[in-house]
Length: 108
Image: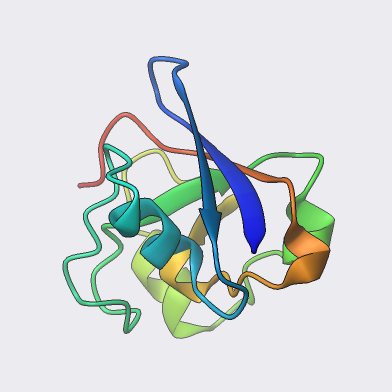
């Protein structure tokens, strides 16, 4: 199991556990984390699972790849920053145990 914490825009924390190999999007949806919609089903087509990777984790998770489909979607996301990622594109493996992701105030 991989443990991660989602931090809502209001500061509330949502600690969750999920099996390795799942995505951060799946972790949020399976645990009713508010603010993560994941409308496209996790295929990197909608940006409704936008998160900000905590600065302590961004280098381990990896930054947005320039020119990728993910970066193309996030350029239109409200409040996107250099630490933005789509939760559907964050594969949760044992080395990300303890990951912290911040949920923006809105997804659109």
